[in-house]
Amino acid sequence: MKRSFYRRQVPPSRQVAVEEKKSSLEELRLRIMNVMLYGAVTVGLIAVISNLMTDIPQGNWGVIAVYAVAYAGLLAVTFFRRLPFDVRAYGLTLLPYLLGVTAAVQDGIAGNGRVWMLLSAGLASILLGPRVGVGYLLLGTATLLGIGGAFSQGWLPLPDEALIPSAAHFSDWLGTGSVFLLTAFTIGVSLSVLIRGLDTSLQKEQALASSLAFDQQQLDDRTHELDRRLVQIRTAAEISRTLSGVLDPNLLLQQVVDLVRQRFSLYYVAAFLIDDLGEYAVLRAGTGEAGSKMIAAGHRLPVGGASMIGWTIANRRPRIALDVGQDAVRFSNPLLPQTRSEMALPLVSGEQVFGALSIQSVQAEAFDEDDVAVLQGIADSLATALQNARLFQQSAQSLDEIRALNRQYVADAWKEISQQPGVSQASHENELYSGSVEGLRVLPVPLTLRDQVIGQLLLETDRTTLTPEELNFIEQVTTQAALAMENVRLLEETQRRAGEERLLVDVVQKARSSADIESILRITIKELSSALGASESEIYLAPAYALQEQPGGNGYQDGAEGGEEA
Image (cartoon, rainbow, N blue to C red; front, top):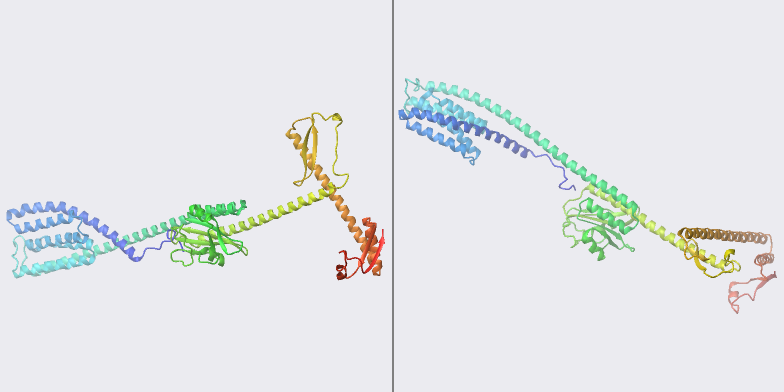
């Protein structure tokens, strides 16, 4: 599941390597042929002119025509570059062969025919390969022997024997042909060995160049891959820092999807959370205009339904669609028409599934195993952050409830104290203002204890305003006074409860020391009356149904009774 543009390249096949080697050898042969052609055109022009100066006075018009045609053919294969290489090569090798035939017919065994045919075989070995060179070698030998046989049989007119002796003796031609064959074979074999050695060197050079190019490509791909992984790691670290500092789930999800889409160059990223009933995965954060529209429309997908998000949440496992057109379990979204690859990652923390991330790309086969590992790590961190955010919200809610209960408790406690006589208020009058009420202004200052107002401080002064320092001082004094009063109240409440506990212990101990029910009842009623300061106390023992049936609703008229006045 590697990305196509990050996939490791395979080495070139043998066929590709052979074609490249052939191409290099052909380029070398083409350069050799071009050099030979340009040299032949220059030297041939000189040779043609010199031969014309010799043959025209002698009236050798046939020879002149052969030389003219040969030179015209040489010009054609030299300057018509659009001709195929084989056509030009065969044209170049056939020209010296034809000149050799002409020279052998004209000059006999002592002429330049053998040299021309040797040149033809050598050129063929270089330009067209050893096999073609051997063919030219055999053709030249057969041609020489044929011309010698034609001379010996009188089929061809003999050259001037005064200048060229032994032209009519076939044995001389046979010896000359043997020497030619041996010489040409030696030269051809040498050229073949040299060409093969050159070809082998070129192949090794090409193989080395291909290997170096392949290694360089692998190095570039690996460097690119490492750069991409480095960006992923940095993105994961940045997202982790973001997760640790955000406690609002909505803000947290939006920041994560934006960072993932931007740093990973993705088409679309979205976060789904399961609703309270666990039936639907509701879109809570999405990137781009498509995400905003779907959030506004309340986009949701059924858990376990025909969508990758629903399947991932139900199975608690990631799912990848490398080609969305071929994946049967996928919800097709018209707002995201360019999606080619999609990956759904579950948001799991411990045993709890919070939802899933939807990550989409415009490229086919855009995700691999490494992408899944990195992005799943981000999803796991996000799930942990969501759990922490929920725990924080629950803790904050519980703390608010405790604070509300504490404020209510403080308010009820001080309301009860304020209703007691003698402690509802206190006042103090400065002797400097004794009896004077003119020009005085009342400044109310609330008496606050744990965000709950338990009283009010009224200051009468002739000043219209107080400085911030004075207001701060008054606030500190009232706060400390409220704390001191609360401490006294708690101490008194603690002492009262301690007294009740001691009374309970005493009553229980005295009651347990008695051996009959009547004594236990008398001790209990006596101790309670004494502790509560009651003038009269009574205890009735009766079945529950009897008490419920008594008229008047009090249910204490029948049954055994015992009592004592305090």
